[in-house]
Amino acid sequence: MVSWIEIDRARLVGNLNALRALNHPGTALLVVVKANAYGHGLATVAPVIAEYADWLGVNCLDEALAITRLGIQKPVAILGHTPLDDIEAVVRNGYRQVLYRLDVARALSEAAQKHGTIAQVHLKIETGTNRQGIAPAELQAFTEEIGRLPRLHVEGVYTHFANVEDTLDPSFAQSQLRRFQEALATLERAGIRPQHVHASATAGSLLYPEMDFTMVRIGIGTYGVWPSRETQLAARERGRKPALQPVLEWKTRVVQVKDVRTGDYVGYGLTYRASRPMKLVVLPIGYYDGYDRKLSNSGRALIHGQPASVVGRVAMNMTMVDVTDIGADLDDEVVLIGRQGNGEIRAEELAEKIGTIPYEVLARINPLIPRVLR
Image (tube, rainbow, N blue to C red; front, side, top):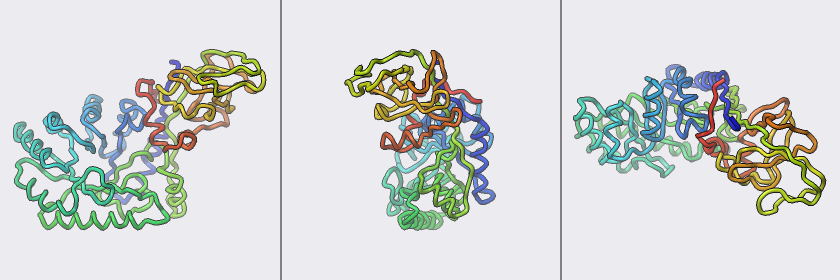
């Protein structure tokens, strides 16, 4: 392999245990494995996660089916939209579908009647994020409509916080919580008492245990990454200090070593010119693999435990790194994310350099790159 991802099983399990320990006893743990398990490899990490989680959460039917093919028996919640043509597969496999559209509700009911089963749904309540969800003003009419549909059961109800990581001003999250509680009261008056009520994702679970309800949805924290620096600082100030450790390491190898003369250019666009005789190495990764082009002339890798700067533009499948002061040989191991010797490169560092968040850095790692559990 010229590039691969290593997944640390012990760290993954440690993160899961640490996050569960923060919740009230009896609170169910739904672990989100959408987007190829945040880039970590669904097929690689889902079987491990399923040993410790109560539920798994995905975005779409294809991800749910992939979990079934792995032989995992835990309940699976589909948190994104499923097209009407695919609803029958949702019901046939017993997946729990997010519900905020009446046409989807009717399709679920029809499929459940056809297969002689119950379609379990989780109502998504819109409380301020303005993504998918049922507006509170429409909730009563919505529940009246779905109440007429046979074999449709509201197993869960949930919402999603828009700004829970703003620890300096929690007022918006608190306003969302109030709207959600009002929605729960509306459901109660309609005789709907869902078994599972959930609002908090990783940041909410870390900062506001009073928002746990009966279930929490843990995403990025599972993989050892804090939702934000502010979340980490605020959690520690509140005495909540889970020992989250990054689970993923991204590695590659040196495929060529070359000498560059003073004044020579490196890479496309002539964006880097050698100011001294240099020794460079070529790495067989680029922006196709998920190593962002904005890391051109700014990223770094670890070789022999030492930082080595990216020089020139990151290309589609190749990146050049300066090893003048380090030295390197063909096939030497190179770390793009992770530890080597005393050095470490975290997803947060790459995110800061390219102006994004670690979620995106991890989720965009090419799914074709092999994931190895160790």
